[in-house]
Length: 145
Image (cartoon, rainbow, N blue to C red):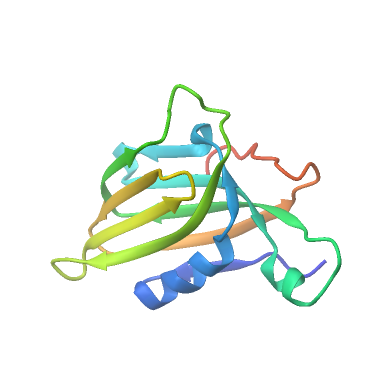
């Protein structure tokens, strides 16, 4: 197995790379952790290993990963049922819209129509693989590793 992926985004172009790696990731509302006092959002997910998939290996593999945003001023969600924490949401991608440079809004967009909007002082995002998802869904990520 190749070394774990660890990517950092400090601008919209970097975030587009992370967005490509988390496309079709499975996220549960219970694994979206907003730490307001730390100005941090952590999202646990089961993401497709796109590098392995694009290499033509027959069986797509999922990896448990953590997505972290720092310097978050506000976190708002739309159409995500927090009363159903075990629902599976399919992450479509992440966008960044700059406002009052270097700040702006990061949007996590889900296939079911839900979204999470982060107002950030500046863009600081990290995607880190934590290991193979043996069950194909495993979203048992606690905090950020």
